[in-house]
Length: 294
Image (cartoon, rainbow, N blue to C red; front, side, top):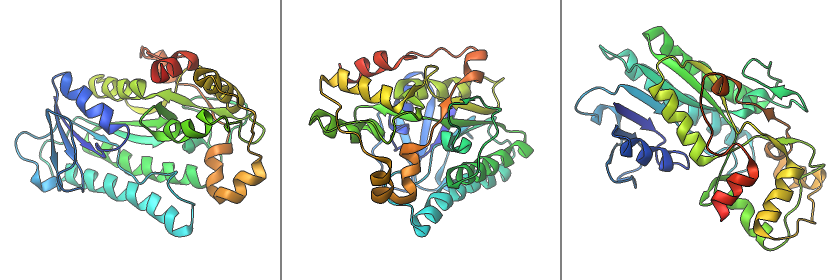
């Protein structure tokens, strides 16, 4: 299968693209970088009109500015929206111009679609609450869903916090925890929808190859934990104390509106993935942290 991946040089794409290539797929990364660093067996283009050879059978859309790389000023929020809508819109317009569009578009979204949910178990049918992250994800998903009018199978991957040692949220946590200065955030009672990077890679591959899959999928481990439980588990994995909590007012002072990412509660369950037969390699946090940290 020939697969075009936008955002293939990011944290998920760096693991996904080589895995797809190893499975025998012809993988092409669409990146705005000149000469992006891609894995052996993976090719890259800067513009969609540079793509030569057979048309792709599927598109995986991972592109978008990192949501946690700066305070949410109005300019930053505009960038977060525009970077997602622009790339997704270009992909859909490119498909519209093709005689035979790709069979599938697997497009990233995020747990932020649901907003604050407290202790409620979140499935794909849970009504969202309003807020910036919901508005962002809702616009992003609706842009991708325009491809359905072209006969393209569209899957929306509402992703939790992806864990691995060399990037993402966990990499930012490791130093303070190793120094013994880690601790719960706020009350610690809010739910933390985590997933091992190997499993999010597996989910994208499964959605590409499963022709019956379409619509929204929650992409997080089937055993969510609270922030306090995650904090204790990470401390035990690193054999370090976790005695220094970060009070909610301090987080809001330091990060402004972006503190929502650290304090919102999302008890997300991957109901559709489980119902449709996807098997997680790392369903439990202790097992996942052991695999990552040794």
